[in-house]
Length: 291
Image (tube, rainbow, N blue to C red; front, side):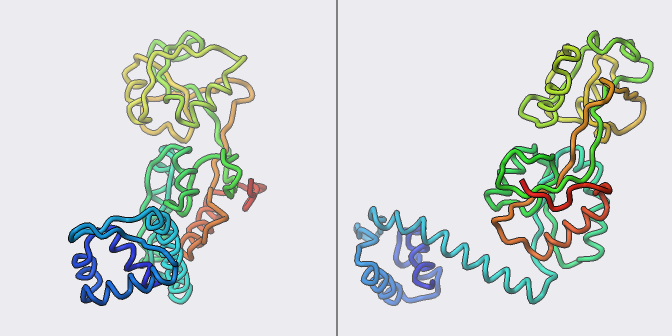
């Protein structure tokens, strides 16, 4: 493992003396380690060009494996240390906008009171980015939608909420037929927009005049009286707005807790997951369901 770390330092710096200084070794000692690694693999990992180094083809091949091996070793070390302490590290969360604005503050505040040694990083993201972040190991947990688009993710449904038509109180569009109202909607890359399009198909054709990628800006436009919108009921915050059903029965979206079962789940992630389920899961929800 030490030889692989030294190899990666050499690959990054492409200079023996600089890599040795980073590692706190004499250049001759680092050269000895490199030679031992090359002998054990039966190949040459670097071309020596003047005072610099360049990876050979086999060196480039090894670099990918070495990065994964070293990262996995660090993950194992962190997992074991956390198992012993249970109260350290960073919890990385990906959260869609409406949950980030309305649910995260209370959940994070309660979690930090119980686990003051944990650092929480909560990022507002679209649902597809949350799923990719979980798969890539950049996130520990996500708050998005069920079902998860990727079959490799764990998905626990928490609650359902209606998609509603939103207009400004007293505006010309209050009470108007839905199909006549100019709408500002999220762009199609947002899962909520795709849910809206699917929900309205065969019911009425939305008159979309603007696509805006921030819910706060959409609600500001609605308050101006220029447009209406369709959003989840939980997204509608602030005064001066009226919500009504866009169909009977109203179309629903399902909020969900997401995770990647193939990756180690830290003690902090398990604790936050338990908190989310305790505070948000409706009775009868498919807790722990995996897709």
